[in-house]
Length: 539
Image (cartoon, rainbow, N blue to C red; front, side):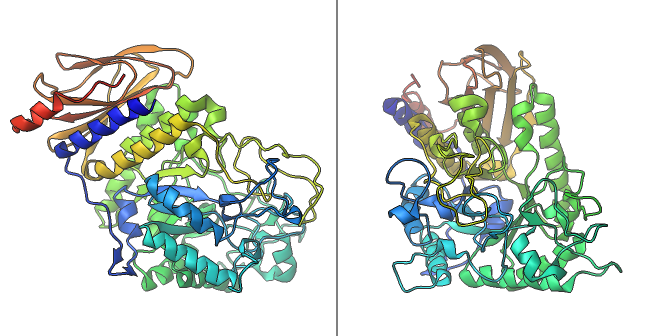
């Protein structure tokens, strides 16, 4: 396996001369961090890893998956998190998305540590993330962590929860919406949180709530964060976001606002709650959104895939014409989705890796993905021997990243996924200009189970052919317009050598397999041609 990936890496190095790759963004200038996240994101160059600091570098000594602090085990915190940053940097990650780091509620809670999204205070950091062995405050530790990220050219996005905990409701009822019965509203099926009241009966903004959000922005910018991800952004009105985003960007124009929102979402989280669609959120100032790629696992042919790409492209073109570039993340597997290992095993995980490396979007992964974690926890939904909330069960969403308990460090031992992950991220960085400026076209294939697309930019192209069928091998032929015999075609990721003949590429794909090709349509450099002739074959 190692030899196989060394061959692929050799091909990447040699092929580098064929592409007009953008240099990696260097935001650290003479020891001073200069935020560039908005630019990085809107150019589709962000490679984002979502992490839960509470588990990020936790130490589970007895291997039962739960961190038992009373037995001397260590939960993740801002101090021990620094020890993983070199590893993260080496994997090609340039942005961390920190799942909520605010204090969590303990009443009517979910899980023994409390859900990260059951916020109880906008103005403080979660004391669970403090390292008790030093004299620093948790705020000082968080600032040190972000500084260490910046030293490694890693940007930091902090999550902004959309609802408040029951504890917060008891302390500040004026922040919350009431139903017809006068009781606080439970949104969707999130029984541990209550819906915020964003507007007064006369339609004006709830200034008390807006002040809380403004203080949150002040806090995270003071810590040195480079942006926020707004949880369920659709649940706040346009005017609320427009005012808040204008305030934040007035202090830092590069401060990123990423909306958890999809074009497929059409309903509010509760009756009579606000609902702001994606386009209006972008008009309010959000720089990016989620798209609908989480539904990719259910797309049995390329029509929905093509429709989603076309919809994104049209939205982007509309905003580009106004001088306001926008982009999306590859939301194939967020913390709200089951592990790709459960959905389709390692082939599906590898498919997601290469899709994100070759589509004009920002890559997005959840910690543990890079080694094939299925997020199966030994303690899941069992009665707990120790709890820090009023819930005495280890509540977990099956097959999903645990955000409710003091859980183990994410990860597994799939080296194939790990090697693909690092190589694909390096490829994405190298091909940055093509992904930013190229023209994407979905191609017809001879097999409806096989998707294919090409991105053309100047004399270079990236061609991708993937077998969406996770059970059977599939033979496929793809017509590549204007492909000539003297064009240079470099297969990067494949298991069986492709057949190239008269503008067609034929491959046999294993279940879930992705083939990636780099194509140069200009070969004036004879020496380059000679070098390419010695590229070793993959397998």
